[in-house]
Image 1 (cartoon, rainbow, N blue to C red):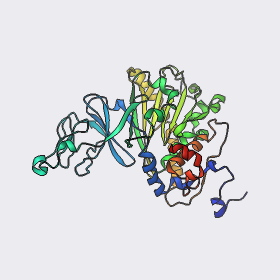
Image 2 (tube, rainbow, N blue to C red; image 1 turned 120 degrees about the horizontal axis):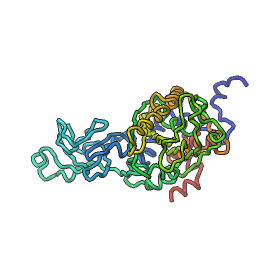
Image 3 (tube, rainbow, N blue to C red; image 1 turned 90 degrees about the vertical axis):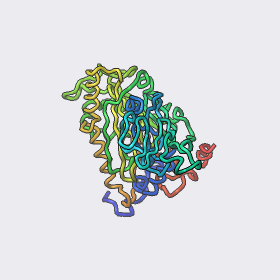
Image 4 (cartoon, rainbow, N blue to C red; image 1 turned 135 degrees about the vertical axis):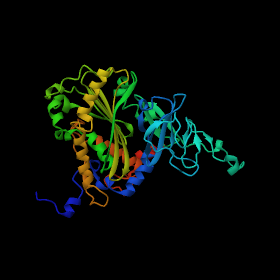
Length: 420
């Protein structure tokens, strides 16, 4: 068949409605703004790991849906989250990506979160403990007890990750949100404390959902030479995608044959508790977080959408906190050889989604993106993406293949059940 003209290029494919989507969901600014309000401001987001806040007064800063966040460990060892915003004049409180409040800063006292603008100070529970010229300026009309930080719902769960939601009254608890998909990893990651040993981030000119998509199917593994020679066998292709409530997907395990690759050896000597040697599980959480336990290392991807065509992805590698120096070195080498910034797989995935981002920038011509492969829910089946975009449609009330139309009107029974 010859190449298609403009009308043929834009025509709907001869597939079922859920097997393709409109490319505008990756490029439209209005849709992106809608996602921040309707999805990212309402879901549970893993913002970091508890091992990154090992001591009282340690902190990390991040953002969710454009809102600046600060996560800190108090002297009572509790981890809490707040908006990183001074209630006085809306100033950003802390600019550093991480650090400690134990020692005083040039513009602040020890053990205090201090706004450098006007020196208002807050303790680790978010209470305001000092207002400059409080009596002189405000008399009795306002006092420090009335102007604490905006606290956020925060929990430490599933292997010690710190989860935050901007929603004061989330529809589901964190356990209800992610407990079922995490069951395949829970025994291994909750057996004993974990520790982050690797961190790097990438800012990519692509839509955050495209990173989810590439984690959701495995026939792009033909792009990965390392995977072809270490894993392609009957067990590899037989793995299945299991769909869970809230748009999450789990990919089943198999035994990776590392020794098939020249220069590599079996990783059976160092694993996680209760995880059989050289096994591989993956949890893909809506709307785009990924937990990948492969043999000796746990990888976590956290996406922070920056625009319809820009995303920051934070990559963490984790091992057991009790590792000996030798064991830790082995885990780091195992992790970085595949998932480090110069590893054999990760940069290839980033090249893939960057290429998609190039063709789906804002104002590019809309087209049909196909999610129609059906292969009995195995890893070559695009069931994970179909499941994801159906959930996306619920949250957004947009049809993924025609985002100007209402998902709820097309699915009235499900919409009514969800509203109850």
